[in-house]
Image (cartoon, rainbow, N blue to C red):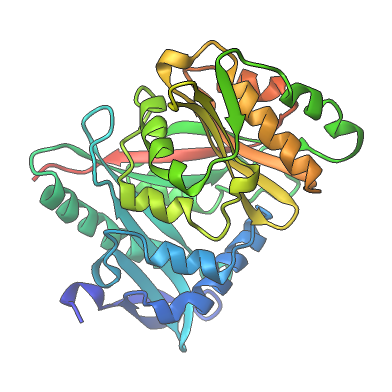
Length: 350
């Protein structure tokens, strides 16, 4: 085992205030069931309503370029997994020439305010600085992590309440906000989708993607997001893992193809939880914008989901989207449900 994957930390029992020793180890594939239980406990506490499944956690731990021994942290107490962390350093620089170091993880609700999150962040931040310098020598790097959901309007505020003070103390600042938007697909609320999906776009055909469309769609996505905040090209192996993931629903996804076979726009869907169609990605190549292609592929996917019996569609969008994506989604019936935050801080230069 790498020396970077084990160390001891001390927290305090919230009831007795007695010190409690923990070993910081790395995650392994054997942790998938325990990791699933932990993430679902966090989801239930935060009220996100997005429980996960073991196959998703296994895919998470087998991402390309992820070294479990050095890029993950596991905190255990009495053999139980109570906190985890995972680091994902970009293989490519983003549009601003920076290395994106995504920090992910969480602490079980029953074990918070014991310093465990701080211990996990200490480990991840140190590893992020080293790995970013190794992969992209001389480039500036930024630490990025989710700041949870804005608690406004909740009777018992949750969401970002627990994590944000920790991030504030560590020098992170809020740099971006994201709308979670939802659309009812059943009953009268879904009426009109079939007609909307049938709108013709001259010179373009709409269809569901096939296995052969995986790489062309990746290239279309890289082109579509070149000018978006924080974007970076997605490596083919990382894209393949996402494309072939067990929650992908290609039968309800849509692509717009011109007469030369070029994919101009796409709406890619997943089923993260039963009955809910997640629109994971929507994009249009810059040269094809302004033709209604994003609206066409999105409407087609929503109509397909409605016909298949899905209750609801859901997506996330940058509140400052330069392409006006929020207006597009509202035009096809999506409404704003929640606001989530992204926090960042620069990695100190050596």
